[in-house]
Every structure is written in structure tokens, then in C-alpha cells.
Length: 252
Image (cartoon, rainbow, N blue to C red; front, side):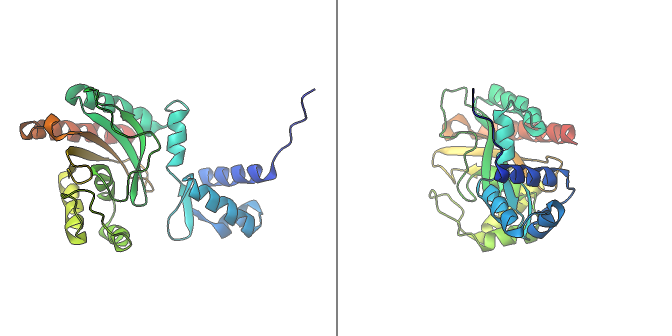
């Protein structure tokens, strides 16, 4: 006979915390969770911070926690059940079909973009990117599009604790210039990466509103500079802006 199954109390407590956060209208802190579940604060602290390290939860920097991006990755792996992924995936395929470029969907996790879905380039050029991959800090067009959804105060807070890295000769390393770049993304509803992250590659990103105040998402298209001549940029920009409007309408 197989051995009798034995429940693991720590796992039970972990799922109790996740269930509580799922039912809550607002982010919750350690004390709130401890009180609601009648659990020791130390136990809650260790479980919550372990889940945060795993990106299952995210610290809102005010001591309160929300679901993190790893939930969307798990949703993708489980069959694209996430409404965001279900809604956006056909548009990634449309971008790929019309432009032959690689197309990505990502979520913001603090200062980084995390890939949660993708369609590889029809040119046969595969970028080094896997679902669940974290982009380097403030690198690429995707994170610019996500940051454009924050307030100036929130953006200032991120820049205050970030040293902008020079990935290529074209990287923006001046914080004032980078902030103005984000403001321009707000005005134009599209972000550009002009060989700033990888030399010889360009990217175009659109902000996506997942209908949640806690999430910032974006779709971006990436290709070699020779794949995107200047004459094609207006058409590509119009395509992406139209897709952004359609997705945001469907996510309401």
C-alpha cells in the first residue's frame, strides 16, 4: 500500500495567505494577514517574503503586498488562462505576421520587465528570451512603456535608486533625459529603443492597461535595424497604436 499522504502545515498556511490576498480588494500588510488568519506574525513574515523572493507576491514598498508577476507566468504555462495573455496573444501573432518581427508581452516588476508571452521572429532570428525571463534593470522599450503608466512621483522614486547602465553607446544614462523620454512615451503612447539595449537591434513598445491599478503591462516588437528601415516606422507605429487601443478596450 502507498504511504498515507500527510499535509504540510507550511503549505496550508501559504495557500491560506494567497487565498486571502485573492479575496482582498486592497494590498495587505503582514499585520493584516496575521490578524485575519490568526497566524503568528513571524510565520506570515517568512512565508510572505519567501513568496516575494519568488515573484509570487510583490512588495508595494509601503509594507503591503499584491500578487506578483510569477502568477502570470504560471497562468501562461498552465494553458494561457490569464485574461491578459488570452487577450494579447492573437495580437502578438498579428504583429509577427505583418512585420515578421519578434513580439513580446511583459509585466513590470519594480524596475524590470518580465516576459510572460512571446511569438518569435518569422525571419528565423530567435532572441535569447524565454517566458519568465527578467529583462535587465530599465533596459529596453517594454519597461519604458510600463513606466509611462506611473506618476512622475513614482518614476522619480524608481530613478532615485537606480544607476542607469550603459549597455551600448546609444544607452540613455542621464536620468533627466530618461525621465523626459518616459514623458514623451506618455504623450505619444509608444516607446522606442534605438539600439539602447542591444547594438544593432531596435524595439517599439505600447503600454497595455490590464484594468488593474497594481499592474503595468506592455507589448513590444523587436528586430534587427536592417529589418526596420526608417520608411516602415510610421506604418509599424500605427499598427502598434491600433493594437493598444483594441486590447485596452477588450480588457475593460
